[in-house]
Amino acid sequence: MPLLYLDAEAEIPVVQIPTVIMADHTECMKTGRAVHATAKRLGRRAVFLASSAFSHDLVRGRHLRPTPAREALDQRFIDQLKRGAVNEALAWFPDTAVPLWPK
Image 1: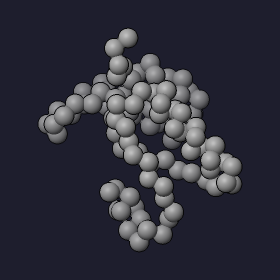
Image 2 (image 1 turned 60 degrees about the vertical axis):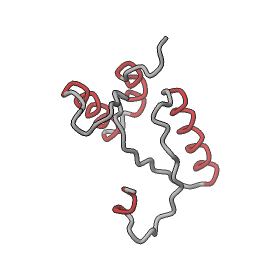
Image 3 (image 1 turned 120 degrees about the vertical axis):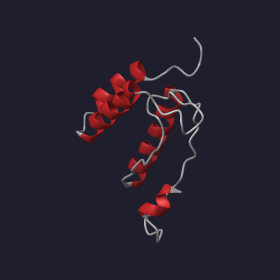
Image 4 (image 1 turned 90 degrees about the horizontal axis):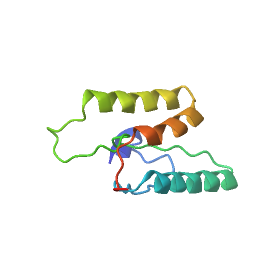
């Protein structure tokens, strides 16, 4: 739905990938690598647009906003990506996210 607002005339070719909210980081990274490899093989650029809590601290109810500490972690991750520090973001991210599955 948000893509409708970015490209109302649907002029940009898009492949939508459903979000599996309960996917762990390994599964998310595997998906990202597959998209990257496909784009590279096709000689195309790929852009990910996502909307979720990066820290995976998901709860139901609009009134249950993330804590300021969680929002700060999300913003730090976004800032790393914006400045091109992808390796730093990848190394740092798993340590900040809430584990989804009991160990």
